[in-house]
Length: 199
Ligand SMILES: [Zn+2]
Ligand SMILES: [Zn+2]
Image 1: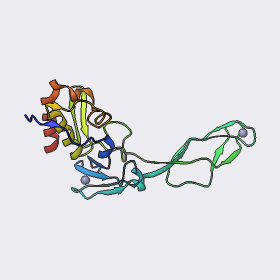
Image 2: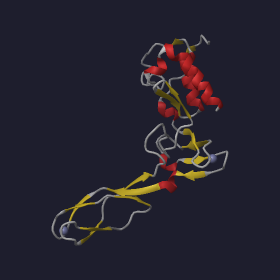
Image 3: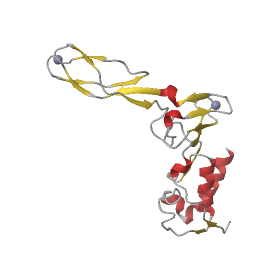
Image 4: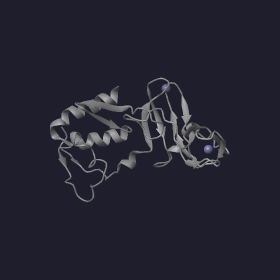
């Protein structure tokens, strides 16, 4: 076991968030999502080196509106819950539940990326399951990409860790869940990381 001190440059989680290795939606092997810069998920691109499936988050852009409006005849409140539009319509026609008159409503539309999944251990752009994830007891250890996985491994495997200083506060490794940091889980976590790398 390495005795080296973990002392990589302090990295925040967002330093790892421009590349996500995920399960390809077509072939179930590993593909990669690249994001031009942190949080620019609308410009994310997925590519699979196995089946050559590729897609752009832009093509999955949808529009929704959950704005409130009132009937222009009777003032009853109109419920507008429209989602999954591929473009913003000039207006939508909403029939009043009280007086049945048709209202043309222009409302605020908001764009979003239609995700594959909305929960689970997924990437933030397409909502695809992360490739690097493994159960440990009742927890899940996961990484966005190999670089991230190696950073966690180096941290877990180093027996001498930098004490928490301001330099390390708020970094990715400091914010790792406790079960990853606990010394008694070290061997199990390192084995899980090795398994993730060769699957
Ligand atoms: Zn594929
Ligand atoms: Zn009405």
